[in-house]
Image (cartoon, rainbow, N blue to C red):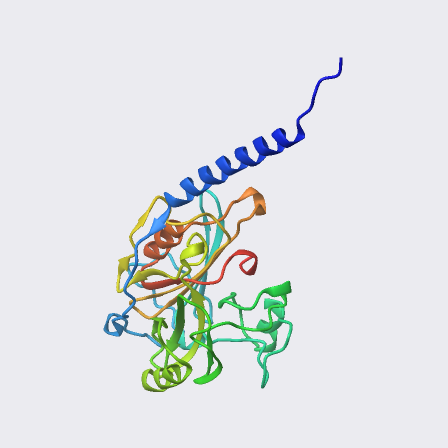
Length: 285
């Protein structure tokens, strides 16, 4: 006697079980969240010490800088490995892009852009049009040496500008409600010299978040704040030094990556007064 095999019933059960799994995953994700944060940067908290002199401070006496005023630190976390680049003189930090009197269809590897600018090192930064992973088109805004090369602050919700002004102070600016003409005025009035965008996206808060520390106050979070991923972040200390951090993840050396709480903790340890998360994931890889 042949047994009956109800394929419809099996399919229903499969879908039901997967729905339960999705709900369980979402419940875990919801335990990791961050509070909203004001990003009105108090520039008086930063006193820029220009130049690449390597005089050690008592607070960071273990930092050894090279002739360019750069120190590299290796950081091992529970679920990631990271490198921190500390640049004494923030005027040395600039935006470099694939822009050349227009935006190409395809981007370039980071080492190519670094080489073309005769730079010492570089990290990924802003959000970009990733359809087909072509990488040539930015999103939001881009400022290079005081010139706006891309200007669409209202193209996406939750956009923040992360950049440096003419006083070499790191600025994190919420662009909500800002038009292209508003942004032009803002850049001129505030003297923004180099900047890009990243996104605070509520539908993907585990990956798309910006503010980490503002005016010395860390962002409040629950759990780990976010999921684990390869991450890139930027910060600035009270002495003006810029902190550039990149972590691995997504299986590299069996590492999952860094969470928002990991980034905040590292930036606090290295003295960041202000800090922001940048584009991560495969860009950081």
